Image (cartoon, rainbow, N blue to C red; front, side):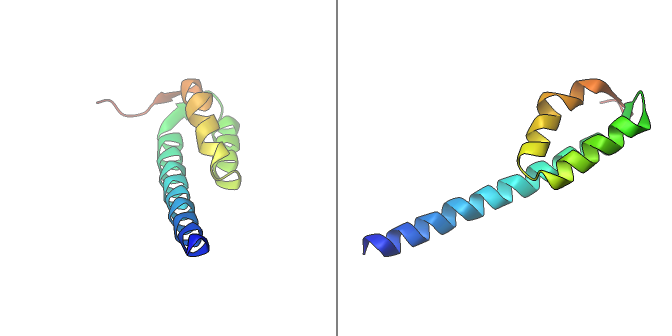
Length: 75
């Protein structure tokens, strides 16, 4: 009984983490491509970081990289 509960809860936590990671990844990619960085290489580096470091990359981008570019669109 305990093992079945752990399997189900582990799947729930893992699935939630995957969905959260995908949402962050997509959000970071959209935001990064819609910003004007002072050099296009910086944008490329952030896109590579976001793609190849699935959970850590988007978090790093939102913590560090988002301040390096200016929005191309206004609210």
